[in-house]
Image (cartoon, rainbow, N blue to C red; front, side, top):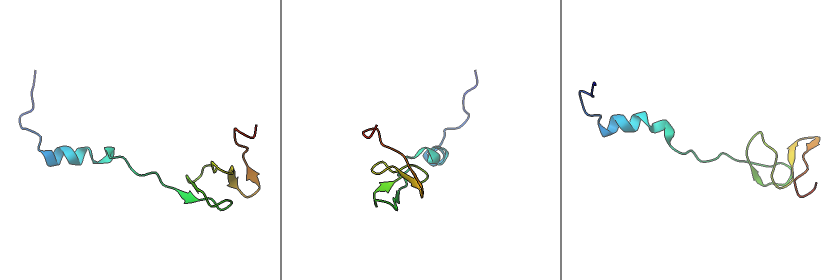
Length: 61
């Protein structure tokens, strides 16, 4: 069974794993209520999506 000919250096290993780092979640301000929300998603506090469309929350149902 073949084995690696040379040891993998720490720099090479870290370069290979650089895309596995946890990225901070991006947020934008809701134009309706001003709360932080994820882009292209409904606001968790008011349900705003875009002008003329609002999604009812689970507590409103």
